[in-house]
Length: 315
Image 1 (cartoon, rainbow, N blue to C red):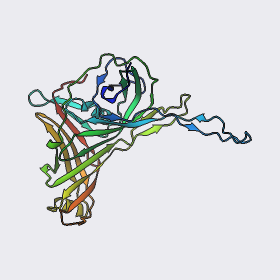
Image 2 (image 1 turned 180 degrees about the horizontal axis):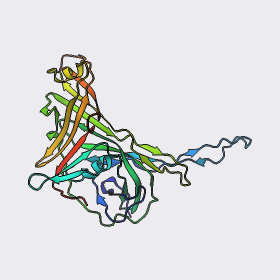
Image 3 (image 1 turned 30 degrees about the vertical axis):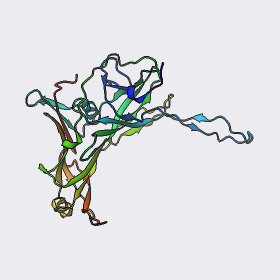
Image 4 (image 1 turned 135 degrees about the horizontal axis):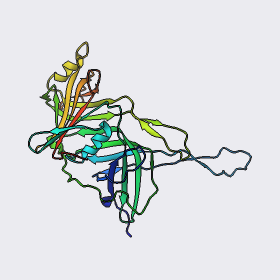
């Protein structure tokens, strides 16, 4: 028996047929960078009087299990997270051996997952069940590692066990999309002088806080979809400023994407509204402007994520 180390930690996941009920087979090994999941049950201090100055026993409060899982944005395994946040994709054959998986926001029903996290040195494994995708955030930069922060709401967590429930999970080779291949496009054309960008997709989950003997939530239901972000550009032209200054406001399309060989991932946001930004000057160097945009789903889906890879089926 050894001490648990993050380098050996394991994350496996499987989609649930019934929310909160871990499936039998079907688990897949999922690469990850870090996580903050874990069921918490705070204590409520006693309010009794007439017992002297010493405090009385506290009372357990309700259980919560929310947190972030930071994962690499990769060619094959990021599919699972896209399905968790957007729902089942439409998959079709692409060019050569590639398959195009298209995820669309706004589906009425979203899936839930069981996520097992294990420390094999001890060994100990626990399962976060009824996990649903609340917020997905990705930042673009000129260099560095491309990660996504997945904010989840879970129904609960199982007690630690020395035995894993994932059996022999399927494994898909991890091939990261490089930040260096990222691009930002406006209305289909490359947008110049972009120094940074980020976007956050949210399902605005609402917890179903029913009264139950175990103190856990019943589930979490999807609310109004939201898609927003920011684009920071060197002030070189008025391409974005013109759209932001138009009256009435003129929506534009923004596309954020990465490539790795024949594989690609593109987040298309068809209807984006840009606010008019400040252009502060703080010294002799270049002038930058930050556009904090918001997406609308009035005409179509707020966001469409298209993943092209070499996996024909995830069944």
